[in-house]
Amino acid sequence: MEPLTKIVKDDLGREIKIPFETKRIISCVPSITEFIWDLGLKEELIGVTKFCVHPDILLKTKEKIGGTKQLKVDKIKSLAPDLVIANKEENIKSEIEAISDFCPVYVTDINSKQDAEDSLYSLSKAFNKEQIGNELRNKLRALEFSQNNKSCLYFIWKNPYMLAGNDTYINSMLERHGYDNILKENRYPSKSTEDLKSLNPSAVLLSSEPYPFKEKHIKEFQDIFPNSEIKIVDGERFSWYGTRILHLEGLI
Image (cartoon, rainbow, N blue to C red):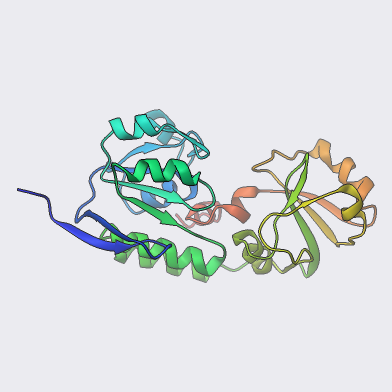
């Protein structure tokens, strides 16, 4: 007898046919991997990327399917998943299309705090876990943050310098912390040193990921922004859009 199936819509509005009960899930997105774990789908989650580091038991117990930008498509196929979870920005379109040839792929698209809450709740419904999904969403909505009341720039990379722009989840989290992101361009623009010197933020935030900014980089930025406060910040706090922040706040 064929297993029962249902139709769900992913964040791109595509209709995806999946088993009514997904038994073999692969996640290509670190933030979502942890969310799936927190939904209680520990056994169903069979494959993760090498960047899926939370909880740390994942890399010891689950199959590794490459990096977010270098998925091992043949390995994924050999694992015979019921469903693969991907992200429009974090994963490569051609690799997702190749996986779609043999398995349903649910693609998420998250550009703000609201997107994150809506997307993760929709995903919980796809897994028949809407009750716990709603509980986690309510915890995320209830979080309170200290208010900095400062203008800022948020750096995610160097060589070239890349920053978080307006249309990003990071920007939503900056707003929740009371920061005013003075970079009004969308997504993640690159800037030259001369471009940066024309800006005058109160604070310059250097993220611990994806580029691993350290204390040793502070002087480099102090030379560019002599009047700004330069800080290293936890990239997971600002850019992981699943349940990571609940773990950081001790709420899970």
